[in-house]
Length: 249
Image 1 (cartoon, one colour):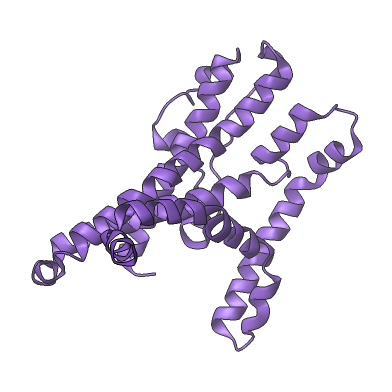
Image 2: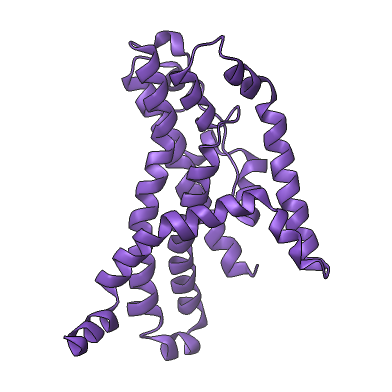
């Protein structure tokens, strides 16, 4: 990663994690639990939400986490609905941000960067700012999808486990297993993904990528789930698509 990629990734991760955690706090507060507000988490201040290790991991690996928002389910007016909506609030915001970040990326790339590329070659600083801008919005799109589906894994302490909590009873054996061992499974998945990436990039064992479980999750999020988003915005924004349709018909 060059300096432009790193700066764009840092900004993108902030734009992903901060609204994600704020959404958890906001929905929990609206459902009757003021714990997050009393702990200063009902804010868009990045310092309150960023977990250093999860932040750096997301910048360089495409998945990570922020500081969990404190929630006391006993305060919810309706336990199940409060748990469910609070759990999916962050993921929902990530998907919304990804949906609108992609067209902004396309507009900057096509109508600012490519259209004025010769100018930017002569004015490197301005060109770098524009490049950081379009890369930032692309990473908000790509990382946002990855983080959303990573958080939907039903492993404690991710949002997916909170969804499981809202839909099952406390005595449910699967729920108890995910609660007791989910964190360890999560650490194993992260380490396994990191090792597969290192091995495939720095050795001749390129097929190590086939064993990257979280890599498959990233591919599913960006390439499969993200495809309808890209197809829609590519059709709307790229002028050559309209020209091709005009010549066809």
